[in-house]
Length: 135
Ligand code: T46
Image (cartoon, rainbow, N blue to C red; front, top):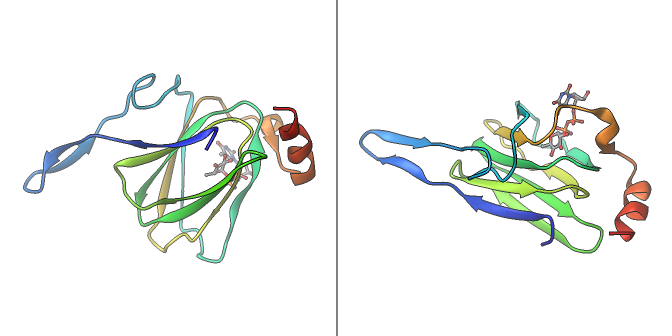
């Protein structure tokens, strides 16, 4: 769907020595990286996200466990499952997201194009729908 796509990473190594995944800005990560954060220990019945961003782009990688992400760009909706640490989900601006189905061991790493700025958030769904109409 417009604004979201999966990225497959190259795992270097093999079963006997283990694996390494290397990510570089402007290569596997399609922007300059300004911030990294991760979430963990999210109870299974919690839905995080419930917002969109005006400008920031990010790549989400589930390092351990799994989760689901429902993305909506104002027109199309798609549910992605992140269950492997050699896969990322690119999410562009103006994507409403709901993140859920965390397992006990889920660790979600997020690589971001902007520094943290609460003014970049759209937390009101009706406001998101109005703004998304004009894209
Ligand atoms: C997304 C999902 C996967 C900071 O102080 N710095 C930060 O870099 C971030 C991301 C958050 N915060 C503070 C702001 C809030 O007081 O941490 C609290 C929770 O943040 P937020 O509501 O952004 O958390 P999530 O897990 O609902 O959403 C975040 C991202 O915002 C979102 O874009 O895709 O993680």
